[in-house]
Image (cartoon, rainbow, N blue to C red; front, side, top):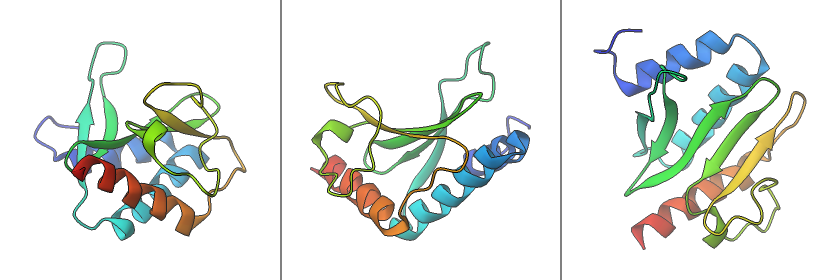
Length: 129
């Protein structure tokens, strides 16, 4: 991956590099995010020696959420998740955090497409404030 690649191309490379269900799931959720908010901005944040590729981040008037792959899970962390309505109970991690909320997905887990898109739109509305 070259530094001159766009953030979207860098996210493509991260997804391709995963080579398993985590990449497939992140790609699917990325697509749902683009359906929900066609104007969403893809970014790479927090590059450091221990994570030289950085963290895929989706933003609109501020960070909506990040998508990180760990050994056994995919974690989507919503920056203002604690202030969002979650009528479908998608959030399942960081539930006691003061600001953030997260969705931890393990192999075989799924997320309701429409509920996820609603959550993404709600995050954008919270940023637009």
